[in-house]
Length: 570
Image (cartoon, rainbow, N blue to C red):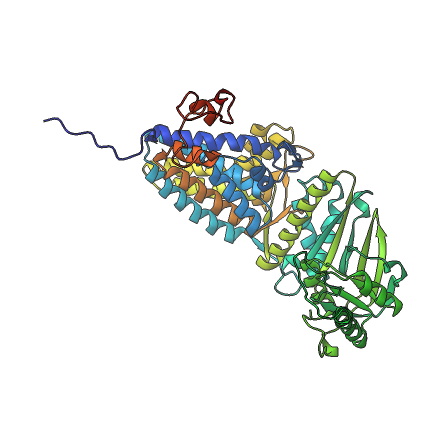
C-alpha cells in the first residue's frame, strides 16, 4: 500500500539536521573566533570596522562582536555571551569568546569520533563545577579598605588597561578609575560617574573632577553678563520651563474689544515674572533646569547676579542632586530652603574648544566626572571604552574582595586540576574532560602568539612549572608578555578579580553546551506575497502586470475609451 506524502512545512523550507548540521554550527562559531582572537592581550591587534558610514577602531571583544553584525543563527550566541560579560563584569569579553570557540573546537573532534553530544554536554558541565570549585580555593582575598589596599585596586585596573589603546598611560588612568569608584556610595552605581569627551590635547590633559562638570548648554542673549564664578553658591534645580509660551499656528482667540488682547499679553508676562521672582526669592545663586530657560529669564537673572542654564541633560541633573544635595523641583510655589544644593565652588572654564560648567568642593559628593582628551575622535571613543572597563574591574574587585593571577596563570592551574580529575574517571567522559583542560590552555597560548613569542614552547614551560609542586607559588606562573618565556604573574601584580574568570568560564561553557544541543536547523522562507506587499504592491491588484503606458495602455482600443493618461490611450 502506497503511503500518502505528508507535507508539514511550507514549500521551500530548508531543514538541516544530524551530525553535519552540528559540525556546520561549530565551524561558523570557530570562524568568528578566528576574527577576534588576535585582539587578546597587551600585544593584541586592533580591528578597524567600517560599516559604510562610521569608522570604529577597537580591540574590545564586545564592541567588535556588536559591530560585525553576525547573521548566522548559531554564531549569534557568541555575541550574546560577549555582551553579557560586558554588562556583568565589564572586562574579559575577548577571553570568553576565545574560550567558547576553543571548547567547541575540542568538542568537534569528539563528535567526529562518535561521542554523543549529550555525553559531551554532561562532561563539560562536570568540568565547569570542578573548575569553579578550584577557582574559589585558589583565589587570594583582600579587603579594599584604607590607603594600603588602594594600591591593590590600582594594580587590578592596570591589568585591565594593559591590553587597551591607552596602555602607555595605564598608571595615570588606573588611579583615575580607582578615585572615581571610591567616590561613590555603597551601591556603586557607575551611572553616577560622568565621562565627557573633548577632542584635542593629549591623554595627560584628561582630568578627574571631584563633583560635576558638563558642557555649557545653549544660552540666549544676556548670558555674557552673568557671573562665571561663585564661592559657596546655593544651587536651585528645576524641572520648570522659564520662557514665554509661543502661540501655535492653529491657535484662535476671538476678542470683542482690542483692549482684551493686551490683557492676555499682560497675563502671560505676569506668569513668567512671577516664576522668576520666586526663583530670586529662594536666594539661589545658580539656577539649573531640565527645560529651556528663555532670553527674558536669562537677562532677568543676569541683572540680579544669578547664573542660569537650561536644557541640562537628565544624567547630569541626577549627578547634580547627588553632588550638591539638592532636590529637583517641578513647581516654584513654596520652595523650602532645604531643597537647595550647595558646593564649594562653581566656575565656568574653557576645556579645549568647549566651555564647561564645574561644580566642585561638594561636601556630600558621591559622584565624579572624567573629562577625556585626545587627538582623533576614534581614539577618544576607544579611551572611553577602555576606562569603562577599568572602572568596572575596580568595582568588581571591591565587591568580590579576591583576585587571581592573570597572564594565563589561573587557566593553566585549572587545566592541571582538570587533567588530574580526568584520570580518576573512566569511559568517554575522560576524553571530553581532557579536551576541556586543553581548551583552557588557549588563553596563555594566544597571549604568547599575539606577543610574537613561540606559543608552543611557552605553553610547555608553563605545564612544567605548574606540575612542579615542590616550588613555592608555582600555581601563579603565566606568560611573560614583554620579555618572553614565563614569570610569576601574581608577584608582578598582574591581577584580575575572581568574578571575571568565574563569569567567563560559566558563560563560555553554557554557550558551548547550547551549540552542542542543537541537532536541527529549520529555516522558513519569506512569503513572496509579504515581500510584494512590503514593497507597495499589496491589495487585490498587487500581482497585476503593468505596462510602461500604465492603465491607459491596458484600455487602449476599448470601446468608449477616448483618452487616457497613458501614451497609448490617446
